Image (cartoon, rainbow, N blue to C red; front, side, top):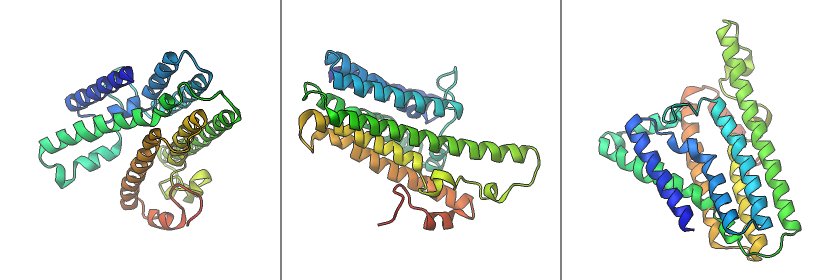
Length: 270
């Protein structure tokens, strides 16, 4: 656990320093898909390569590589590691009156963007720690692994549909042609995006909720302290998606109707 805390503190401090110096506040985004791999493999090595931990580490590695690829093709990474595309939402948040004073944004960057978000990443990987010295690997573990693989596929399809939509829209615009109705809306709204407004976010949350259940399989205890990371991740995505939707609603005339018609994360309304 000490090694995990050292990695966390070093990564959070690095994100704060680099973002403060460069003005690019997406430094945590660059590590979001990479550092969980390090965390889970550290635990796996410390466990002596227990089978359950090795399985969890392989799943997180597959998740991380896929997410890193998607982030990279959107311009998130650069050989100048401190550069790369910044999440457009940070500029919107920074422009709010609450952050008119520079020191307030500095504190927000330190506490929330850097240390809280990096801490959250550590928290949602902690079911690996709780799974150490657990019960023998069983059918539940294989079922959980299959669910995570299926969710990675769903997230991949959702990201690809979004990528294809915006790529084709920009291609038509660059050619000076008339945009078909599908692209005039400006936002992806078909495929998985016609079932829920954020299928990639939904799959991402589900992956880490399922990941938690490895600790249940290892201990036989349905509720343990390592669930906190998954809970906080769901809360983060709720707030993050709300911010995205408020921006999209002001940008796209048809988005308000989309909000009314399509559920946020679950493909049915309660």
